[in-house]
Image 1: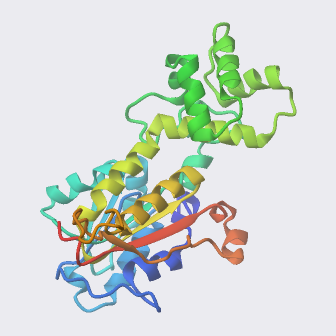
Image 2: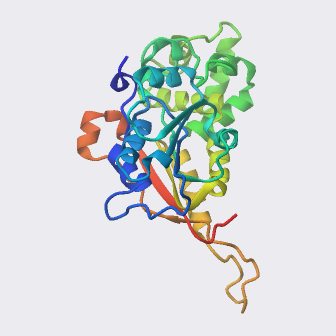
Amino acid sequence: MSETEYHVPVLLGEVLELLVGGGDMAQPSIKDSRKVYVDGTLGGGGHFRAVAGALSGRDGAGECVVIGIDRDREALDNVRRGGLGGTGAKVILEQSRFSEFDSVLRKHGIDRVAGLLVDLGVSSRQIDAPGRGFMYMRDAPLDMRMDQGGGLTAAEFLEHSDEGELALVFEKYGEIRNARRMAGVIKDYMRQKKILTSADLKDCLTREYGANLKIQVFAKLFQALRIAVNGELEELRLFLDKSVRWLAEGGRIAVISYHSLEDRMVKEFFRAAEGACVCDPGLPVCNCNRPVLLKRVNRKAVTASDEEITLNPRSRSARLRVAERTKEACL
């Protein structure tokens, strides 16, 4: 299986420019001599290989370390099969959640990084592989786990959650209207028959809503289940909360998100970290002593060009936000 078959990396040129440097918004000189870059969502390895390749042609490339992390063992095995030679940088691959990147850094004796990258999308290979259960357009087991080595599948999640819990997940993560009704329909159906596949779920909903139920509803439902099964928003929150502590002065964090819940979380975190004094403007002297932790490199999210969307329609919803650690954020 080639890398292209596994996953097409989105916004690749923009990631390289804003994370590694190049162009008008190039990354300034990092104060730490040992430059470490972390790709927390390795996937097909497209971003990872490109970052390693960009570093290999620079002076001091031998001092660079590129770390690829993924919770999906299959992704790691695929990148290893594809080969990682000729980059000039030291390469490290680890199976882990991206929220636990700090444990990987400690394991390798690293205390600062020049760049942190996460692409929050599901890889093309995961979407298209029938056994993974991410695709709602055709029948497949309701799995949806990024790491198939443990945790509840989507089918088990439906079975073990009560109506109120499902309604909350559908409303919060899928922004589904009248989520309580949908949750009730699913739990009523499951009293007679188990829901084990996407076809079962579709049959359940079409019995209640009719055969013309909009495909967007299924998309929102699958999104909600996937987020809940993998704890995606909690993963992102933990990652963001840890990020500043590990960034070297001038180091950058780049996040590619695909739906409004993720993008809003990233935008609000960057904005809050960029804010300084929160004291009452009427006070003559600042009492909060709050440091400016990050400055946003791009205030408006970077999106895919028309050309990229034509070549890779899944890039249509991608949003890239990048921020840089400031001198004041010496933690």
